[in-house]
Structure formats: C-alpha cells, structure tokens
Length: 505
Image (cartoon, rainbow, N blue to C red):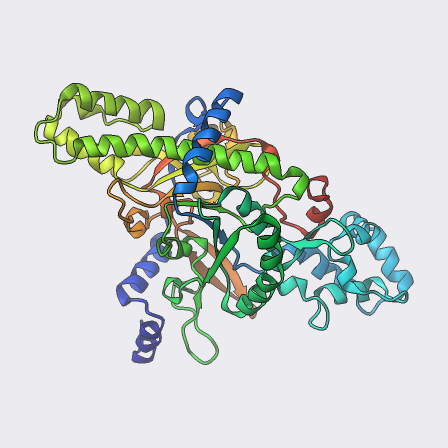
C-alpha cells in the first residue's frame, strides 16, 4: 500500500506506520457507536445547585483558587470560513449584477437583507471604510476579499465581536483575555492564558496581543502571561478515497488532514498548570453580561476544588495502608457513587479488601473535570450521557450526536429524554494527589473518533478526526456535570449572530 517515498513522508511528519495502519483500519471498520445507557439529567448525573450552594462553591474558589497555578486554555486555531458561508454565497450571486438586480436578489433573501439593513451595527463596520458609491457586492468584497478585511479566512479570535463605541470595538481574543483576568488571577497578580493557533496566524495574534495586553494590565493591575502553541503535525491523520485507499495529491504524495480538536490533548498535556479552564473562542459575552459568566466559572472551579480535596484525602489514606478497613472503603465507594455518579461494579461486594482498595485507587487517581451543562433549547452540540465502554464500565461522558446510532429506537428514546447539552465550559485538574502531572494520553479512548466525507478539487475523500478533546480524549477522566444558566452560552456560529441581543455591548 505504501511506497518508500510514502514511508519517508510519514516519518517526516513524525507519525509511526503502526499509527497509520490503525487509522486505515478505522476507515475500513468504522467506529462503534457510543453505547449510551441513560441521559444524564438533574439529580441523575447533573448537579443542580440552588443559590446557597452556588455561594458556597464560589467562596471555596475565591478562598483557594489563587494558591493554584490557574491557566485559561483557548482553542483558537480554526478559521472563520463557516461563519461567513452565507455571505460568500451571496457574493457569488451578486458579482456582475447591476445595482438594481443586486437589491432585488438581496430582498429575496431574509438573512442577507437583514445583514445589510443592520450593517452599521456590526462591530467591523468602521473597518470597512466604505465609500458612498459602494454597492452590496463591493461591501462584501471589502469584508471577505484579499484586498479587504479577509474575514472569511481569518481565525475567529481576531474578528471584531463587540462594539462599545466607534473607537472601542473588541475582538473575541480581547474579550477572552478580559474575562480570564476576572477569575484566573493568582496571589501574585499573574494571569496565565494559553491559546492554540495556526502557524500562519501567529504573527497576527501577537500583534493583537501587543495592542491590548498593556492596556488591560494597566487597567486591571495584573501581569498577563500569554503563550501560544500549534496543533502538532504528528496528530494529523491520513485521508483515504471512497475505497479506503490512501488519497493522493496530483504529484502522488499522501494527503494528511488535521486531526480535529481532539489533537489538542497533546497541547493541554504540555501545560504546567493545576487548574485549567477551557471554552471555545467564539463563546464570549460583552461586559454587561460578564458578571454572571464569571460567577458561574467560579462555581465550577469551587466544585472541582472541593471534590479534588476529598479525592486527594481518600488517596492519601489508602496510600501505603497495608490493612484497609472495610467500613472506610465502603464510605469511599458510597461517595464515588452518590457524589460523582460513578456506576459501581455489581461484583464489588464479593471482592477481597485488597482488590477493592486497588480498584478505588485506580478509579480515583486520574484527572478530574467539571463541565457546565446548559438546558437544551435546540442548539446543536454534544450532550451528557452515561456510556458503557468496551470493558463494560459505565461512566459519565460528553457524547456528540454523530457518535450515536440514531437508527436504534432504544438510543433514540434515551436521546429524547436528555435535558442538557454541552456548551464547552470546563475546568480541569491535571495533577495527582502527590502533586505530579498526569500523562493525559493514558486517559484517551482511541475508539471514539469520527469519519466524515470531504471534497477536494472535485474528488471525494474520507477524513478521520481524532477523539474529541472533551469527548474521547477525556473519556478516562473523573467527570462531574453541573447545570449552568443558558445566559452563559453565547456562541457566534454565523456572522448574523454578532447582532443578536446577547452580543450588543
């Protein structure tokens, strides 16, 4: 299947041939659908916190978090091409038409018509520097074209998201930095932020950082430690044709594609942090909505700190204890089941105490994540479920709809009973009870990837995405789900979202 030239290309990327063969096998056999057994719902997998409980966890966070090394982790490497898909299509239809024909076409398209009527409200309007004679096609060219703002090819982090005034218009990057300052500050006034970006956009991010960081540091009296990393080339995956043979460029070289955001588990693993907050680059809010968002981050962080403290206490008790006491082990089992929602093996009662102790240590000594979940109001995205893995263990997982067999009536029934979906709002603990970093690659489920069909130059190919960062890449973590208000979720998936009420500054 592979020539010597192919093998050299594979070695150059830093990928082992065994890894490539495993990828080919995934294409041939596909991934098994997630074996969801039950939807996680309030009281059954999702913590529902009243006002008193929220205050309790916020206080835990405020009192203890600054003593930890906190990092804000923001995946920001993706381009905004899908965000402007409708405008690209509009430009194709408008080019070459006279002004009257352009206006008639626009009036027949509801979203496009509304876009032009509200154009002055968009935070990038002033950057267009339009002349009076600009026609709709010219406006879109100024926004999307190479001679203009090139918004269709820019990363979302560098797009203007919020307009406070004609002179104060902030990028998503700036809003994330300002948010991080509100809850990631350590005792010494340091705020650490790490972003994954694409190599071709690093200079632009650094230029934006040089513009905004000194101003924010002065305003908030903090020091900001900003770092960047790239998705590693060895996490790329091979593409195949519809017969599952390697897809090749016209010059005969193999085609590789980025492995999806699941590849970023390598970048996360490289961070030297105690607590790491993760959310998507396009999910930000203006200042007027920031208070609730920050409070909810502190709640999630407080839940994590309390649970982590309990887990560490139990592990320290068990560490080195030669003769474990059954009553103590039983209380730990009860905590794991009632507090963390862990499914307990039915045969546990028949185990010897030494075996039970070993199971408890292996179960608890792993990375921890607390994930905010919002009520499902029709937004696309994965959701929280109990999932059975290949070895029969059941645990809480975030599952994408693409991972579920929607031809199976039983699974469809489970999905229909779900109440929440995943807004990507996580706080993670990356160290064990001895203070040593976990090796995050040990907790990835390699059998939870995705396969999709793409088209390149009119030729169809199949692409493989690695297990998602908050799906299969964290499958082996201890997981807690917490209900958070829908107001904390304000994504920008389409350009039209920028003028929705939640993004009006």
